[in-house]
Length: 140
Ligand SMILES: [Zn+2]
Image (cartoon, rainbow, N blue to C red):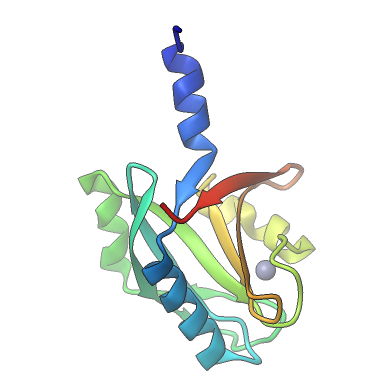
């Protein structure tokens, strides 16, 4: 069987691995910040999450977030890591809200991870103003 490079790349692009240990950290942060949304960045290498860096939700709100984080984290992108923007939805489903879609431009196509605390559900998205695409999330 021949798999074209193009389709292999496309699949990898649509699939992320977040191991249970990292999920545990995301869950813990969401619980600590509830009823407000928490936020941070997940550091990926080759589609696999290696660590979670907590940020501060500058607006301390249950409905939205503004990520404040150590700016040196962004340099990891120059070292071959990919960053995904994480935030929690304390009460609602982990689906990008209208606000999330409107602010998506800020993150120039980075994947979004959203954790729904009440539903205990982590989901991943690629979001632009007009298009919301769900990505496949695996634990291994
Ligand atoms: Zn949101």
